[in-house]
Length: 454
Ligand SMILES: Cc1cc2nc3c(=O)[nH]c(=O)nc-3n(C[C@H](O)[C@H](O)[C@H](O)COP(=O)(O)OP(=O)(O)OC[C@H]3O[C@@H](n4cnc5c(N)ncnc54)[C@H](O)[C@@H]3O)c2cc1C
Image (cartoon, rainbow, N blue to C red; front, top):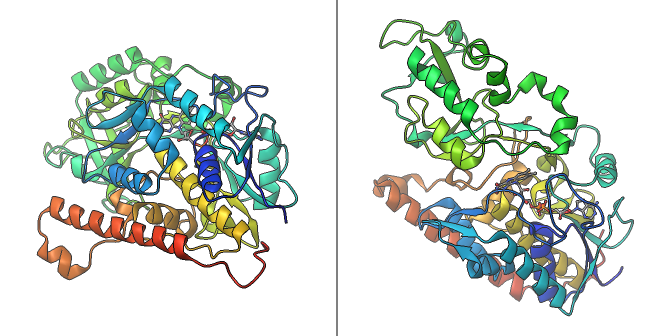
């Protein structure tokens, strides 16, 4: 067994994993294929390049994204520290200067005495040693094919179009109505009714909205998207196309008017996040700021907060519950870890957070210490619990939300009537549990074995 950890991918997860591992005293070889080999979305050769929005989401106390960041701060995350040092004004959000962020992370990683950065594509999973695969949603084709072999035919997903997801508590229930088309399937959908004027205004705004520039992989896959066409592409085919596609009103009667609306946007409850709804068939590549304004034009969503925006891009991720343990190791091959978006999480902070955990676990494995799973009560623990234990056949990556955290005990939930109080209590429990995990990881003695990975 080699005494260094091999980390493949110098993105958000890979850099955080490398730093954590090295800070635990374990040497790291960090492989990054850029700049020699590019991805369809990255533009530079810097490590930890942020490919799209510059937001690390809300840093407002009492929100789930803040809680996750707070845990990372307490675990001395390199990337959160650099994000704070390079932040730009953005209200309650932690937004960063992308170039300064990537440059600073690259410099800090390069200067670490225990990290060696190797600028090479890794085309197959190394046959020995402790290996962290953190190659992200745009993993190179050769390595993706090898991961496919490891995971089995069913277990590596390529997901190209994402519909927006809205926080259920921000929907205007005075406007939407519950019904399924022709009354079939119960009242599973919430329906946002549009009259002709609102429909026309929505189509105008959609046609005018700025979209993310099509990347080469999107062009390659244009025909594949026919089955789930982005709404802006559908609208360009004709003003009525959406009314005969995802916005068709047939079979839906608004109980307030007794009539079929001119057009409808249907919201479907997400199976996995009971307090959120996806906008059915609303995958799109409108830029996130403009997309928020656009979607808020839909009646019932005037004040909506979006947990996820529509996106059209390639996404490579393994089926976590089938492949991974609660310490993000491959079942039956414990020397292999997955971290970042490819492990089945979504978002910058979520990705680097799993990198932090895996960096510490990989170091523990080398040092012959026990790998202690993170308690589910914490934000990071609940995220990883979702990855490893979610029981849904249609597994999809998620962002951190309170829906992933365990609910409060019934008596406590009854005592704390106001939602902010309940959230504050969940946060206190989460931070205590996370700190306890940090303490246990520090204190755990080397095991009696020689620490060889299975
Ligand atoms: C087009 C697009 C837009 C996105 N927009 C957002 C957004 O606005 N907000 C958000 O939160 N998330 C967004 N995401 C998701 C985002 O990619 C992740 O949140 C985050 O970057 C994932 O971090 P990661 O470390 O897992 O992957 P990455 O940050 O992508 O890092 C993976 C690294 O591995 C390298 N690599 C790949 N294959 C190999 C190989 N075989 N050998 C060596 N190196 C390799 C890549 O070059 C890359 O540097 C977007 C994703 C895409 C594709």
